[in-house]
Image (cartoon, rainbow over all chains, first blue to last red; front, side):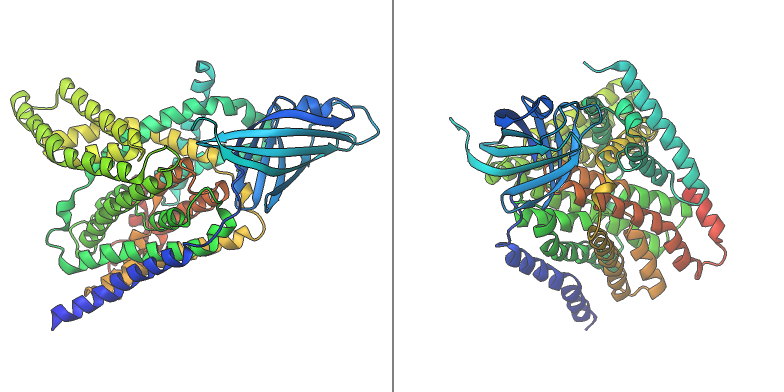
Amino acid sequence: MAQVKHLVQYLMLVGLPFLGLLGVLRIGRDMTAPMAVHGTYLVTTTGGTGGSCLRELLADSSLAVTQSGERIQVRVGRRAVRLDGQLNGNRLRAEGELPTTTTCPSGEPIRFEGLATRVAGQVRLDLQLRAECAACGSLTLEAFRARREPVAGS
Amino acid sequence: MPNTVLLLSQIAVILLAGQFMGRLLGRIGQPRVMGEMLAGIMLGPSLLGWVAPSASAALFPASSLGFVNVLSQIGLVFFMFLVGLELDLRLLRGQGRVAVMTSHASIIAPFFMGSLLALLLYPRLSDDSVSFTAFALFMGAAMSVTAFPVLARMLTEWGITKTRLGAVAIASAAVDDVTAWCILAVVIVIARSSEVHSSIAFMLGGTALYAVVMLTLVRWALRRLEGALRRHGGLSQDMVAIVVFVVVLSAWTTERLGVHAVFGAFMAGVVMPRDERLARPLLERFHDLMVILFLPLFFAFTGLRTSIGLISGDLWAVFVLIMLVAVAGKMLGSAVAARSGGLSWREALAIGSLMNTRGLMELVVLNVGLDIGVISPALFAMMVLMALVTTFMTQPVFSRIYRGGHPQRSAAGVRATVAAS
């Protein structure tokens, strides 16, 4: 009788949670998470207007994206300027303050356009970039995942 | 090339901070390891990087962290070897149904609750480069970890290893450890199979073959060391060199298989002969260097990766939920199982409070998760905080529950022995 009691207890305390675990794995199988954009990208210039401060900061530099779900943190350029932002679908928007040492002509807003590329495993990720700063105060970076394609030859 | 002056400065600061915090926390009855873990967090972006960003950037520039990482990884490999060496599954013998039920329930209850939590966290804190299965299994494994070495040391210091409570707790923690590592290995295989261009079958097959070779051939070969021990009358330098070689080779193999070097190191410890003339001197030779130098480096590296600033707004509510799941799953799961096995509620809850100790084993698991990209930086920060809080609460909670039945052991006595550990 005691054996049966222990068996029942074991099934309740171990067997049931195990079945629950299997159920969770089954339920979660079709769940989706935000698009992955994290990683380090290489930036190349494709266009833009205005002075040289954003080019100085962004052109031929790197862009490090840290991601926790839809929350994004971007470190831009050699000075690792930190921008915080959000991911909505395949669009990313991050904002931050430019370092006070950045010099650029006063007046009109300055725009930078570029392409950030990252190779992760067998997949190449492209981010279309558009950055704007007003009087070198704050920087807004917008990007969207343009392409996700296999690396040539793989 | 490493900047030697910078690297030595980093090591000096890390050791000083670890020693200071270890002593400080020791004064309030916490284990030294708790203070060292806190010191690591304080040196990272959560405190130093926040209050003195220029000092932080000068002392820990991003380009130099690779060298701290390498040193901490070497330390971690040998620490995991010691964990494997200390693990003795013979402890389970004679503990009967209570130990079996407690150990199994203390794994599956937090594992299930962790996976349930994953349903909520996956869309919020993960991304589509990680499958839900890998994420949920990792959360389960991370929730079910118990810091076996810390627990064993606490019980020894308190002098309760021979009591029923101590024996059940230590046997359950030993089973937890082995199970959690096995599950984590599977999670890594699932998560990494696409990243390292290997098929799951190759990685699982390779890992299974490796485990069989270690448990049969390598174990048999290592038994020959016992004969050499008898002939030399003790542990010679040549024998230590052989042991180090086995550890490194085993860690290299699992890293190459795509699992993780820590598994190979742990396995090397498990297959070592349990001869007291070998195990004890090995532990003594490695222990001090590990505790004084390498573990603080690992804590500092963990702290440098932990940014508590990433936890903001509603993520604090998520953190509270993680804490509830961690404590309820581990503590109550173990306690209910121990109670069902015939222990009193007081003993059962005391076991639950001990099993809730996650300590640095949790940090090892979390670092592996962050390395392979299964968890995001914000979730990593929350889980590191959870590891710190559950480790911190062990001593006061256990002391409160246990004191009632053992009036001869004062709270101060318990605190003093914990501090010494």
